[in-house]
Length: 203
Figure (spheres, rainbow, N blue to C red):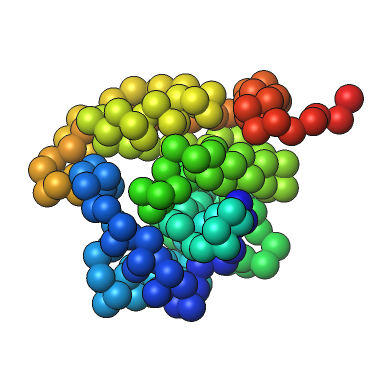
């Protein structure tokens, strides 16, 4: 599995991935059709230009195909007197103090294969060891049992349920489950994920 910077070059691959079987996207917003996918990517790139997100395409090395997307979002910079929604002043040198991981979806053929686990591990590794963030937040529709189980399997802790938090993918008002991993918890989480991925940790 490899994370690649998201670009419009991935439109066709992502359109194909999202079109395999849309029954798995009941609680997840996934673009449908090439036009919708191009707009989705363009919006993500516009937010990236404002240092608000860092989006990726997920390439599954087993098939050498792009099978989904994920991104860092809600990047918050505590060292400056500004809100978390404001863009960074210097995206070249600034790194966030906290961030979310979200907008993750995979083609049905890549679900339950370890692709999601590996992509999350790489993102957490970067967040905690390169950016040195204090917290990573991951959220899910409270009804989305599959996503919540996957988040909990990462070692993330449930903070609580925010009721009527936003509109869901099915156009109903959704409650959102909030999970987090703190920097103090990262060594234990890293060891857990390394073991699950069969990685050998240096002594």
